Image (cartoon, rainbow, N blue to C red; front, side):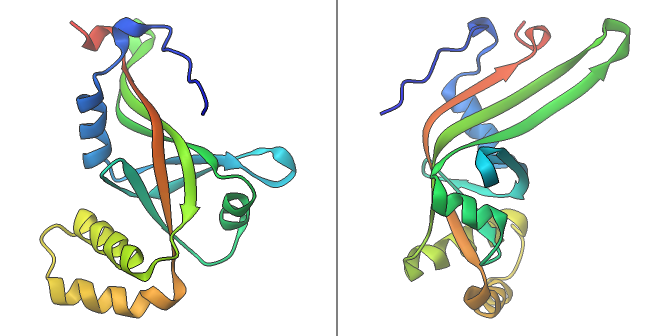
Length: 162
């Protein structure tokens, strides 16, 4: 098991429930994995958070899938707030970084549930029949990825802590 270092600026650290709230409402972030030749590969993705997991959909082939098959370690970063304050030469930010391991979801039941979670996250007022039609249409050609979160830190600008 990896030991994760504590956040240096702990006064700016968000409580876990605040970090989870950010993951629950966010719609995009950047997945970082080990890519070709050992170079970091960071790719922006849509996602949904559920029960200490992040789910992503993907094409069946490509750089991301090859990297996931090579090394399951990853991180995922979400920026919740980024307000530029030019007069102060700073930004008022809030973000979360999750660390964990990513896997291709093989179980059809979990694949179906992940697609439902994604559909409901992006179309909360959508009709279940329309969602099921999209899932049935896309299921054969989509890969589902699940990131199991092992560690997470949320951080905000010092100006937001008061």
